[in-house]
Image (tube, rainbow, N blue to C red):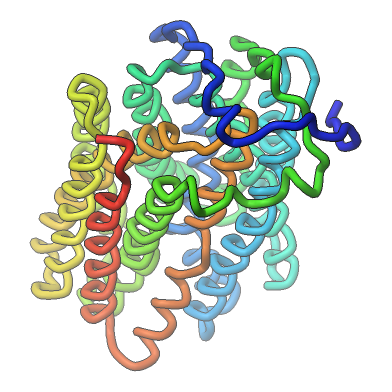
Length: 419
């Protein structure tokens, strides 16, 4: 059950900091595989719409207004996640179902988002699509906060780079494998949305059945619900907010550059088959991202360093965007895919570990991770893209994306408590 009534016991930030946080036992390779498979299912639902499926659907349903409809649907998803993620985080922290503190929300979120996702592709009206996509985002938010909190709950610090890689690398695998499914195996719009929704549900099953949530800390007396919704105070938590700002900017810059890549290939490069061209670039991106993601996570754990890896990751992604801005050719696009994959792989494997290390309150991990995850879904990318493309072109859009990502990489050095 979710406790919403018990009053807080007198406590303070300093008293909480003085209490020892139990070290979780080492997680096994099997656990990491099941954990990664669950993330693979979530990333199928998150990545494919933003990178390809929404743009494809909009081009079929509203060909004359495809950019506007794509931007609206992506912006809508961002707003739903922005609002709901902190709420789900508080609810997950306060859930007292034995062994199901996080898994209850993971299960419910997958059921909601996967089912709604499977129905999107058969819709012909933008309003119906928008309603279903809002439900998809709501389910994604529940899974995102609960599954993210699992790292802080169950993984010791010296393995969090590996766990972050198990969380991040499947993002690229989901995009690449999903692209093969929706462009080659099931190219029909309705069928592609249905198969991805069902596949995502199946991927969650091994983790849900093969793990059990630990009990919350014994001293974690539930706060009043309204108090638990409050954001952590800025004063003692500067590192948390600088890490949040860095993640928001790096993700926003990446999304600015990748969301409209299909239109860049068709409208700027005039590629004969944009769908196949997109798939080729994503496969190149996958190889680079998978390699750098796993290596980055292991090196980060071994060196006990996080910040420099985030900066390198942002710089590589910025270089990819600048390559497209300066040399808008097919060959340059392949180079950019390699750079973007190397950079984003490192970022995925290190940033989550860094964020987990600077959480303000161990009794509200899902809430605090939820706030960061919500912030990274601020609709910056569609807004920036709309503004830039209203007055300029795709080359200028990629230049702006590079600047945003580089700024995010620089800001990570404002974090002082993590190397």
